[in-house]
Length: 146
Image (tube, rainbow, N blue to C red; front, top):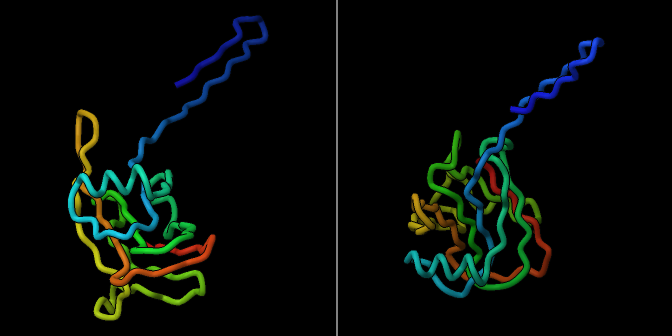
């Protein structure tokens, strides 16, 4: 909290409150491998991914720009906030390529991988990836709806 005052005879004062929200990033990008272990996930984060740093629950969908080939990944913390289920993914053409209500038709599969971090905690991430390798010349904007 920040408080500033002027003790002059005019009696001016000002008070404001600010907060900081720490978030674990959303990672996205392409890689040629199927990520199944924490070390593979860390390699993806270090070498192949981009990240979004946005407070959870502030919007109903997130946009990510892809450019490349391989398995397309979108990874977010398992406890993502008010809506941790990924309801829908739209490709750059606006086609729904994942719908939670028609999971058998989805172009994506998902898994949970632990990401060890520095103390005091580690965190589980939900990793969504395309079932087949793909290529997108970008930037190609995908929409992920929670």
